[in-house]
Amino acid sequence: MVLIFLTLMVAVVGYHISRDAGSKKADEVTRESLKIFTAGKNGIAKAAGKDPAEIEEQVRGWIGAKVTLPRNERIFSYKGATREKIGKQSAAAVRLTFSGEPYLLMIIRPDPLRVTDAPGAMFSEASFLSWEKDGASFVFWERDGVTYLLVSGVDLTHAFDLVRQYFT
Figure 1 (cartoon, rainbow, N blue to C red):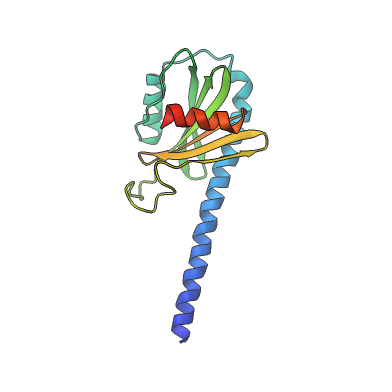
Figure 2 (figure 1 turned 90 degrees about the vertical axis):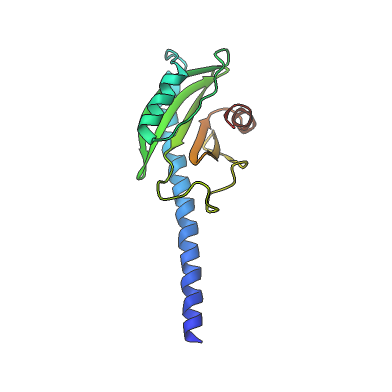
């Protein structure tokens, strides 16, 4: 009886620790991404545009994953990318404008220990998490084992539509 009770107790405590770790990780990604977005927000609109293929190559070199950025010069302008570190994870911060509004696309390195087809993925490939915090909009999704977070100062519905139409 005692053994069963201890086993159940360890399982419940382990579940709470893993659930809290995921929440803390998402909070850390959000907080760091908002800092990066806020710090470069004013300079995004003034920066010269860059070739999306050049930025994709930089991102591949930094995080080791192939990404494809949308191409439509009339509405997208890529302003640059920087290598970032969020916690212990490598990430790329891609600054862009869409219809003249500044955005930050965080691309986070896939976990090398996680198999991308495993059922333990954060959420299905067809799902998004979106929210507003401190006057910014966030849209979070996964595709091909890579985690993406779009940060903007526009209305959440506009940010979500941007992701849905052009990034998935």
